[in-house]
Length: 312
Image (cartoon, rainbow, N blue to C red; front, top):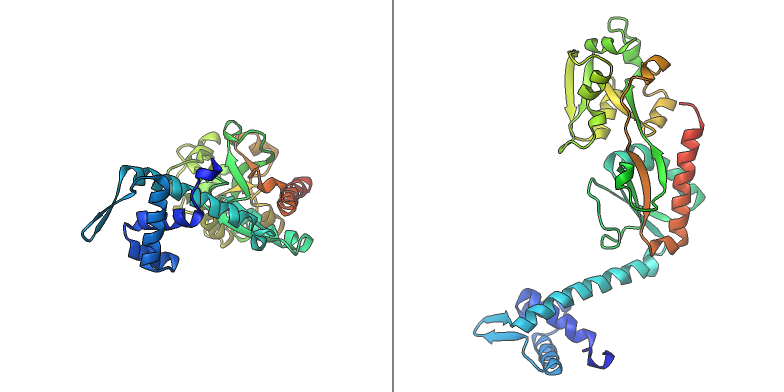
Protein backbone atom coordinates (compact mmCIF):
# COMPACT_ATOMS: atom_id res chain seq x y z
CA UNK A 1 0.00 0.00 0.00
CA UNK A 2 2.79 2.42 0.91
CA UNK A 3 4.34 2.02 -2.53
CA UNK A 4 1.10 3.07 -4.21
CA UNK A 5 0.70 6.29 -2.17
CA UNK A 6 1.69 9.43 -4.11
CA UNK A 7 3.92 12.12 -2.53
CA UNK A 8 2.15 14.53 -0.19
CA UNK A 9 3.10 17.57 -2.30
CA UNK A 10 1.11 16.16 -5.22
CA UNK A 11 -1.93 15.71 -2.99
CA UNK A 12 -1.65 19.26 -1.62
CA UNK A 13 -1.34 20.76 -5.09
CA UNK A 14 -4.27 18.74 -6.42
CA UNK A 15 -6.52 19.52 -3.43
CA UNK A 16 -5.94 23.26 -3.74
CA UNK A 17 -6.56 23.18 -7.51
CA UNK A 18 -9.72 21.06 -7.03
CA UNK A 19 -11.04 23.39 -4.34
CA UNK A 20 -10.49 26.52 -6.42
CA UNK A 21 -11.02 24.84 -9.82
CA UNK A 22 -8.06 26.94 -10.85
CA UNK A 23 -4.36 26.21 -11.14
CA UNK A 24 -3.62 29.92 -10.81
CA UNK A 25 -5.49 30.36 -7.51
CA UNK A 26 -4.00 27.15 -6.14
CA UNK A 27 -0.53 28.43 -7.00
CA UNK A 28 -1.24 31.72 -5.18
CA UNK A 29 -2.43 29.86 -2.07
CA UNK A 30 0.57 27.53 -1.96
CA UNK A 31 3.04 30.22 -3.10
CA UNK A 32 4.08 28.27 -6.17
CA UNK A 33 3.96 29.01 -9.87
CA UNK A 34 1.00 28.03 -12.02
CA UNK A 35 3.21 25.71 -14.02
CA UNK A 36 4.40 23.97 -10.83
CA UNK A 37 0.79 23.20 -9.84
CA UNK A 38 0.07 21.98 -13.35
CA UNK A 39 3.09 19.63 -13.22
CA UNK A 40 2.02 18.31 -9.79
CA UNK A 41 -1.46 17.50 -11.08
CA UNK A 42 -0.06 15.84 -14.20
CA UNK A 43 2.34 13.76 -12.07
CA UNK A 44 -0.53 12.67 -9.83
CA UNK A 45 -2.66 11.73 -12.84
CA UNK A 46 0.21 9.67 -14.25
CA UNK A 47 0.67 8.01 -10.86
CA UNK A 48 -3.03 7.07 -10.76
CA UNK A 49 -3.30 6.23 -14.43
CA UNK A 50 -6.39 8.39 -15.07
CA UNK A 51 -7.36 12.07 -15.44
CA UNK A 52 -8.58 14.06 -12.45
CA UNK A 53 -9.65 17.19 -14.33
CA UNK A 54 -11.51 18.00 -17.52
CA UNK A 55 -9.48 20.83 -19.04
CA UNK A 56 -11.76 23.09 -21.06
CA UNK A 57 -11.27 26.53 -22.53
CA UNK A 58 -11.08 28.87 -19.53
CA UNK A 59 -12.66 26.24 -17.32
CA UNK A 60 -11.48 23.41 -15.12
CA UNK A 61 -13.85 20.62 -14.04
CA UNK A 62 -13.29 17.59 -11.87
CA UNK A 63 -13.79 14.12 -13.26
CA UNK A 64 -15.67 11.56 -11.19
CA UNK A 65 -12.35 10.20 -9.91
CA UNK A 66 -11.21 13.76 -9.18
CA UNK A 67 -14.33 14.48 -7.11
CA UNK A 68 -13.83 11.36 -5.02
CA UNK A 69 -10.14 12.05 -4.46
CA UNK A 70 -10.78 15.71 -3.61
CA UNK A 71 -13.17 14.77 -0.78
CA UNK A 72 -10.70 12.28 0.70
CA UNK A 73 -7.71 14.58 0.23
CA UNK A 74 -9.45 17.53 1.93
CA UNK A 75 -10.34 15.38 4.95
CA UNK A 76 -6.86 13.87 5.14
CA UNK A 77 -5.06 17.22 4.95
CA UNK A 78 -7.36 18.78 7.54
CA UNK A 79 -6.87 15.88 9.96
CA UNK A 80 -3.11 15.99 9.42
CA UNK A 81 -2.99 19.74 10.06
CA UNK A 82 -5.04 19.37 13.25
CA UNK A 83 -2.83 16.58 14.53
CA UNK A 84 0.34 18.56 13.85
CA UNK A 85 -1.20 21.53 15.63
CA UNK A 86 -2.02 19.42 18.68
CA UNK A 87 1.51 18.05 19.01
CA UNK A 88 3.40 21.23 18.16
CA UNK A 89 5.80 22.50 20.87
CA UNK A 90 4.08 25.91 20.87
CA UNK A 91 0.87 24.27 21.99
CA UNK A 92 2.34 21.76 24.41
CA UNK A 93 1.69 23.96 27.46
CA UNK A 94 -1.73 25.25 26.42
CA UNK A 95 -5.00 23.87 27.77
CA UNK A 96 -8.06 24.68 25.64
CA UNK A 97 -11.38 24.56 27.50
CA UNK A 98 -14.94 24.77 26.23
CA UNK A 99 -17.94 25.41 28.47
CA UNK A 100 -21.08 27.51 28.71
CA UNK A 101 -20.87 31.30 28.76
CA UNK A 102 -22.42 31.52 32.24
CA UNK A 103 -20.08 28.91 33.76
CA UNK A 104 -17.04 30.57 32.20
CA UNK A 105 -17.87 34.11 33.30
CA UNK A 106 -19.33 33.37 36.75
CA UNK A 107 -17.31 30.39 38.00
CA UNK A 108 -14.26 29.55 35.90
CA UNK A 109 -12.72 32.89 34.96
CA UNK A 110 -12.78 34.37 38.51
CA UNK A 111 -10.89 31.30 39.77
CA UNK A 112 -8.23 31.13 37.05
CA UNK A 113 -5.66 33.20 38.99
CA UNK A 114 -5.33 30.34 41.49
CA UNK A 115 -4.55 27.92 38.66
CA UNK A 116 -2.02 30.33 37.16
CA UNK A 117 -0.40 30.68 40.58
CA UNK A 118 -0.11 26.90 40.96
CA UNK A 119 0.97 26.28 37.34
CA UNK A 120 2.50 29.51 35.94
CA UNK A 121 3.90 27.73 32.91
CA UNK A 122 0.51 26.53 31.64
CA UNK A 123 -1.63 28.83 29.50
CA UNK A 124 -5.40 28.47 29.32
CA UNK A 125 -7.62 29.22 26.35
CA UNK A 126 -11.39 29.38 27.01
CA UNK A 127 -13.96 28.87 24.26
CA UNK A 128 -17.34 29.75 25.80
CA UNK A 129 -20.48 28.92 23.82
CA UNK A 130 -23.70 26.93 24.03
CA UNK A 131 -22.73 24.38 21.36
CA UNK A 132 -21.65 20.83 22.13
CA UNK A 133 -18.51 20.50 20.03
CA UNK A 134 -16.51 17.44 19.05
CA UNK A 135 -13.38 17.78 21.18
CA UNK A 136 -11.01 16.14 18.73
CA UNK A 137 -12.31 17.98 15.66
CA UNK A 138 -12.49 21.25 17.55
CA UNK A 139 -9.00 20.83 19.01
CA UNK A 140 -10.43 21.12 22.52
CA UNK A 141 -8.69 19.53 25.51
CA UNK A 142 -11.35 19.84 28.22
CA UNK A 143 -15.11 20.38 28.14
CA UNK A 144 -17.22 21.29 31.18
CA UNK A 145 -20.75 20.30 30.22
CA UNK A 146 -24.02 21.14 31.96
CA UNK A 147 -26.59 18.42 31.41
CA UNK A 148 -28.83 15.81 33.08
CA UNK A 149 -27.06 12.62 34.23
CA UNK A 150 -28.50 10.55 31.39
CA UNK A 151 -26.89 12.87 28.83
CA UNK A 152 -23.49 13.02 30.47
CA UNK A 153 -20.71 11.29 28.50
CA UNK A 154 -19.78 7.85 29.76
CA UNK A 155 -17.31 7.90 32.68
CA UNK A 156 -17.23 11.72 32.75
CA UNK A 157 -16.64 12.73 36.39
CA UNK A 158 -19.28 14.94 38.00
CA UNK A 159 -17.99 18.32 39.11
CA UNK A 160 -21.05 19.43 41.10
CA UNK A 161 -24.81 19.80 40.89
CA UNK A 162 -26.84 22.99 40.82
CA UNK A 163 -29.45 24.74 42.98
CA UNK A 164 -31.58 27.76 42.08
CA UNK A 165 -32.89 30.38 44.50
CA UNK A 166 -33.80 34.09 44.41
CA UNK A 167 -30.95 36.55 44.96
CA UNK A 168 -30.71 40.32 45.11
CA UNK A 169 -28.37 43.10 46.23
CA UNK A 170 -28.08 43.79 49.97
CA UNK A 171 -29.30 47.36 49.38
CA UNK A 172 -32.52 46.05 47.86
CA UNK A 173 -33.09 43.82 50.87
CA UNK A 174 -32.70 46.80 53.24
CA UNK A 175 -35.40 48.91 51.54
CA UNK A 176 -38.20 49.25 54.17
CA UNK A 177 -40.68 50.44 51.56
CA UNK A 178 -40.35 47.13 49.69
CA UNK A 179 -40.09 44.22 52.15
CA UNK A 180 -38.66 40.92 51.01
CA UNK A 181 -39.31 38.52 53.87
CA UNK A 182 -41.25 35.83 52.00
CA UNK A 183 -41.87 34.87 48.34
CA UNK A 184 -45.19 36.76 48.25
CA UNK A 185 -43.21 39.98 48.80
CA UNK A 186 -41.80 39.62 45.27
CA UNK A 187 -44.87 41.53 44.13
CA UNK A 188 -43.07 44.69 45.32
CA UNK A 189 -40.02 44.04 43.12
CA UNK A 190 -38.79 43.84 39.55
CA UNK A 191 -38.05 40.26 38.47
CA UNK A 192 -35.00 39.70 36.28
CA UNK A 193 -35.73 37.09 33.61
CA UNK A 194 -33.29 35.00 31.59
CA UNK A 195 -34.66 34.61 28.05
CA UNK A 196 -33.07 31.35 26.98
CA UNK A 197 -33.81 30.72 23.29
CA UNK A 198 -34.66 27.98 22.69
CA UNK A 199 -35.65 27.41 26.35
CA UNK A 200 -33.41 24.76 27.91
CA UNK A 201 -33.45 25.52 31.63
CA UNK A 202 -37.00 25.57 32.97
CA UNK A 203 -35.54 25.80 36.47
CA UNK A 204 -34.43 29.38 35.66
CA UNK A 205 -37.97 30.41 34.73
CA UNK A 206 -39.71 32.63 37.30
CA UNK A 207 -43.09 31.09 36.47
CA UNK A 208 -41.76 27.64 37.41
CA UNK A 209 -40.31 28.91 40.69
CA UNK A 210 -43.43 30.88 41.69
CA UNK A 211 -45.70 27.94 40.93
CA UNK A 212 -43.56 25.74 43.19
CA UNK A 213 -44.00 28.34 45.93
CA UNK A 214 -47.77 28.27 45.46
CA UNK A 215 -47.83 31.74 43.87
CA UNK A 216 -48.70 31.15 40.19
CA UNK A 217 -50.75 34.36 39.95
CA UNK A 218 -48.16 36.69 41.51
CA UNK A 219 -47.72 39.92 39.51
CA UNK A 220 -44.35 41.64 40.10
CA UNK A 221 -43.73 45.38 40.11
CA UNK A 222 -41.95 44.99 36.79
CA UNK A 223 -39.90 42.71 34.55
CA UNK A 224 -36.47 43.02 32.92
CA UNK A 225 -35.39 40.40 30.37
CA UNK A 226 -31.87 39.46 29.24
CA UNK A 227 -30.60 36.96 26.68
CA UNK A 228 -27.36 36.21 28.60
CA UNK A 229 -27.41 34.87 32.13
CA UNK A 230 -24.37 36.87 33.27
CA UNK A 231 -26.33 40.03 32.34
CA UNK A 232 -29.10 38.90 34.69
CA UNK A 233 -26.60 38.58 37.54
CA UNK A 234 -24.94 41.91 36.76
CA UNK A 235 -28.36 43.60 36.91
CA UNK A 236 -29.06 41.92 40.28
CA UNK A 237 -25.72 43.08 41.72
CA UNK A 238 -26.53 46.62 40.58
CA UNK A 239 -29.84 46.49 42.44
CA UNK A 240 -32.14 46.48 39.41
CA UNK A 241 -34.27 43.61 40.69
CA UNK A 242 -34.38 40.02 41.95
CA UNK A 243 -32.77 37.21 39.96
CA UNK A 244 -32.91 33.44 40.14
CA UNK A 245 -29.34 32.73 41.16
CA UNK A 246 -27.52 29.47 40.55
CA UNK A 247 -25.41 27.73 43.15
CA UNK A 248 -22.52 27.12 43.13
CA UNK A 249 -22.00 29.58 40.26
CA UNK A 250 -22.93 32.47 42.57
CA UNK A 251 -20.80 31.43 45.56
CA UNK A 252 -18.31 34.27 45.16
CA UNK A 253 -21.00 36.95 44.92
CA UNK A 254 -22.70 35.61 48.06
CA UNK A 255 -19.47 35.29 50.03
CA UNK A 256 -18.42 38.82 49.10
CA UNK A 257 -21.79 40.27 49.99
CA UNK A 258 -22.55 41.44 46.46
CA UNK A 259 -25.74 39.35 46.56
CA UNK A 260 -27.92 37.88 49.29
CA UNK A 261 -30.48 35.07 49.28
CA UNK A 262 -33.55 36.45 51.11
CA UNK A 263 -35.46 33.16 51.35
CA UNK A 264 -32.59 30.87 52.36
CA UNK A 265 -34.42 29.24 55.27
CA UNK A 266 -35.50 25.67 55.91
CA UNK A 267 -39.14 26.63 55.40
CA UNK A 268 -38.59 27.75 51.81
CA UNK A 269 -35.75 25.38 50.85
CA UNK A 270 -38.02 22.36 51.06
CA UNK A 271 -40.49 23.86 48.60
CA UNK A 272 -38.26 25.23 45.88
CA UNK A 273 -37.93 23.32 42.58
CA UNK A 274 -34.86 21.15 42.10
CA UNK A 275 -32.82 20.42 39.01
CA UNK A 276 -31.24 17.13 38.03
CA UNK A 277 -28.63 18.89 35.90
CA UNK A 278 -25.01 18.89 36.94
CA UNK A 279 -21.61 19.89 35.55
CA UNK A 280 -19.39 17.15 34.13
CA UNK A 281 -15.72 17.24 33.08
CA UNK A 282 -14.96 15.66 29.71
CA UNK A 283 -11.35 15.29 28.53
CA UNK A 284 -10.30 14.58 24.96
CA UNK A 285 -8.63 11.11 24.97
CA UNK A 286 -5.22 12.09 23.59
CA UNK A 287 -5.17 15.31 25.65
CA UNK A 288 -5.70 13.24 28.81
CA UNK A 289 -2.12 12.01 28.46
CA UNK A 290 -0.64 15.50 28.76
CA UNK A 291 0.50 16.60 32.26
CA UNK A 292 -0.88 20.14 31.94
CA UNK A 293 -4.35 18.80 31.12
CA UNK A 294 -4.16 16.44 34.09
CA UNK A 295 -3.16 19.38 36.31
CA UNK A 296 -6.09 21.46 35.06
CA UNK A 297 -8.63 18.66 35.62
CA UNK A 298 -7.32 18.05 39.14
CA UNK A 299 -7.50 21.79 39.84
CA UNK A 300 -11.14 21.92 38.69
CA UNK A 301 -12.14 19.21 41.15
CA UNK A 302 -10.11 20.83 43.90
CA UNK A 303 -11.86 24.17 43.37
CA UNK A 304 -15.27 22.47 43.24
CA UNK A 305 -14.53 20.67 46.51
CA UNK A 306 -13.31 23.84 48.20
CA UNK A 307 -16.52 25.63 47.25
CA UNK A 308 -18.67 22.83 48.62
CA UNK A 309 -16.73 22.64 51.89
CA UNK A 310 -17.44 26.13 53.24
CA UNK A 311 -20.73 27.80 54.16
CA UNK A 312 -22.19 30.41 51.83
